[in-house]
Length: 440
Image (cartoon, rainbow, N blue to C red; front, side, top):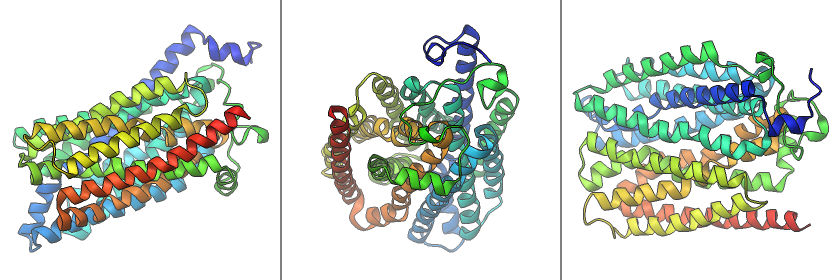
């Protein structure tokens, strides 16, 4: 043990500790990026899988709705995994869970390639989403042990790049494969290989805690909801859930995450299809243009993450509110087909929406969960917020497929604009709550 005061450790880590923190951050970012190679392959290959199902007796409409149902059921499985995985992760460690999710995703991705029917595809895809839910709670747990609470916003901003730039990078990578004539099964084999390589790197180098490397853990946020209990081991999901749900601001965070997730997941899953159906782009062109949404979302995450560590109480809520109001306006432009003079216009507006909503989306299950959970309940807090949020993700599947078929993409974007406005109202309540506490 050391006699160095905790504040000194937080404000001035040793050169070795700083190097270890950077290495840990890099491993988490690259590892979670690998998860997206085995997740984004489904929306990129969706139309090819749909065509294959059509050759086996299904109509194109039945195939599209069936694949949309996979998105919905996958989101349900992902949410269930978050609830179950969060409490378990706080008890057995983030590194183990993070690596277990990788192994499971590789196995399910390879299993998917063996399918020829919708039920088989559904089982493999839903299983993949379940095991992939372990990745984020593992990340949050490791971050809670390695980094000081005064840097949570910045650190989680960088970590969030893994699911934004990682999504964009994986889609760009798959575009190259498509241009070289890869069939969808060959794309699945290749993406599974990428994740397998990153699994080996993390298995060899990632550590659960600075203590495993002979360094001192930074202190948690003293205002976390479990501070009075002491220790760093979860007392069980039931106790954690009760503590969290008694906090009004935590409920606001869950509601915000539902709305923001519905918006993000809709664009993540359906943007390639929208570009093909409404703008007439090829599969490869749609994959390329769809990467704009996560790319500009990544820029947003970095900016708001950096600012959130420097703004006072209520700053994050204000950023969320402003982003949602601006996104609602942009969605109405798409609904009215204002930018449809060329394929570039709608793609640019989609990129703008990514910039406006993805940064705010990163807050609830990231820095906010770390603030609420401390070392004892960070993974559980992230799991609950993320798990509840996938109510929105489930709606982004079958419902958005039905709306786009019945009312066209203009109707779908009008509905999303209404969702953005309703979520903005919750953000306003969140902001008022934070400002009242700041002036109390």
